[in-house]
Length: 211
Picture 1 (cartoon, rainbow, N blue to C red):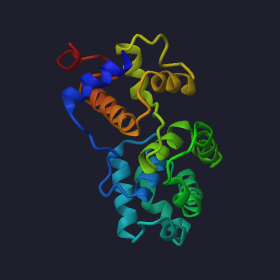
Picture 2: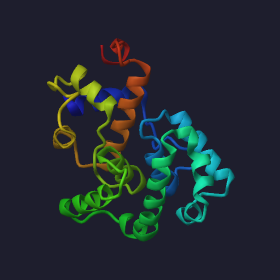
Picture 3: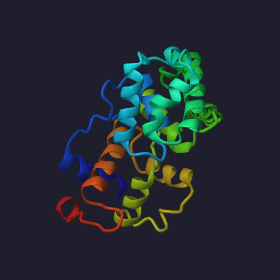
Picture 4: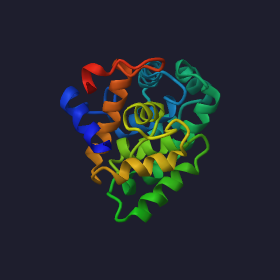
């Protein structure tokens, strides 16, 4: 069912070409993954635009920015005190590791090691780490978010998908899909699109898509 739903959504919506940012640079994706925590994407876009207007388009430029200026720029994304510190940490990480992370992982163990390294950064949880790995570095890992849980429970007959441990639900998706970074990318984007258009938080209107 998991793979079949992907095919249905792709047939209906077509290619989404995510990450949903303007430039799609690695650094913008990484910064966006931090800023979007507990925040609507439109507010993230405003924060990223504020940073761009300050000439901050690379991690080195962010680290050169006074902390007060950084916090003011990202205020639209909320939790700006915590996120400013996390952005500085992830900027240092990006400077140190972008070159090696861009290369494909040679094994599942290496992918897990990279994920563990990201999770060691204060403020980076599983969803954020996986978003960075998938969208910034094109690594084959499936992102689980609230939209994925909603669709899994309503349309994939996965009991208690809303409360399953993150890694358990992720493993279920990855077990039932080809190990293909592009599919993981498109599927997550398609799920987000479905939830925004039809599979709403309070009610499901998915009949036009899923029958």
